[in-house]
Length: 146
Image 1: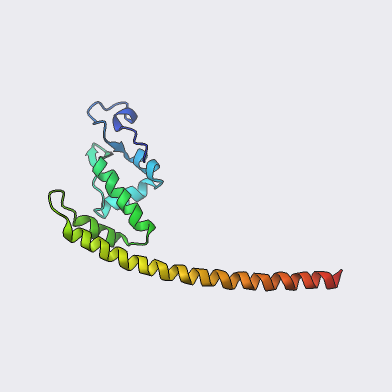
Image 2: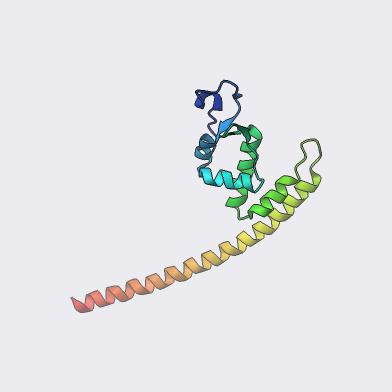
């Protein structure tokens, strides 16, 4: 899992920060993203860090939301789709609507990725065959010129 450094340890001048918050730099480092990326996600309403003056502090909730964003992006969902799925979450509800939407979108995305995989495998096979022909042609020409 992620190595969460409490903001209270990384903020020498702040004594009011709870142990379960991360500063923006720590969050960026833990997820391998830039500060600009985190600010962009905040501007789009995907994450909502607490503010302590100019300092952004990320709770465990925001860490989980960023994990979902990163997963969604890795598997090819748009930020709009990720936000749509996350916005349906109700901590007090059954989340049936959210789960159905997530499953529906995931099934469609999996089908799309499987088609892309087939196309990539075909392209790789064609390229390997072409490379084999080019190697043979090169070997013939090297023998002829020797």
